[in-house]
Length: 282
Image (cartoon, rainbow, N blue to C red; front, side, top):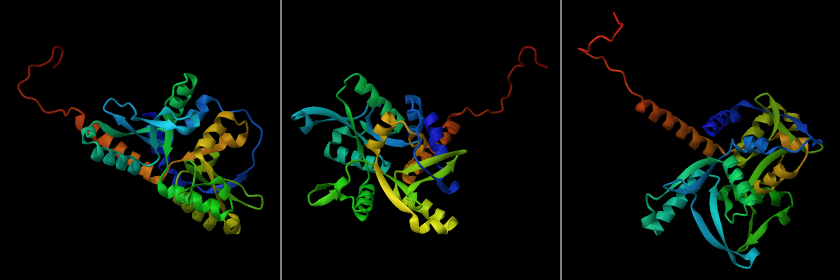
């Protein structure tokens, strides 16, 4: 329930904030595990689970371990991709119909499971699945900035290796651009480039002098998670993850459906007739 509340709060981010000052990194203490979990709890992700709620596991050959089989659970960034996966799975394996479902959880829960598996040497790994549109947007950003070395090639086309996060820089020194959110100055990392572009357009209307200096950058989610665990600077503490608007809309609809179901399940008081008076009543 706490995750649902946090996701609900994020629904108002896009229309209620503006970019502000640029923030250079400063020395600071590393984040605690609780602080990392709090940052990630605002991000809904989508897993394929069985009827008991356990993640669907696939065994694949790991070339980095001499072909050793590794158990992998997929984590989708977008609910539509997760739903399409379930549709394909049940078409190919009809016996799975009704046995698998899309479950929304927070990225914080996945992070905690990864940490637990790492501590216990559990072989299960989580594979993050970005949307094709996000991959194409990341490739475009890197090619435009001459950073094709950060991409990999598959079947003659460039692929971004991981889940891309989009951020903006501006000014003569291309500092990170920030927003004011809940009284704090934060550096937003967007899962969807279109969402970032919308906020940039708003910023450029408010501060046209900076419009020509704004640039879009892309960083890897998996790398940022490692940074949260290991880096010690103020910039890490200011990072805030902004889920794509489709995911937030999905969660918003889910919250409304849950509220409607709860209201329908509440007992309705009906007028009675002929009941004897309760002891002590007039």
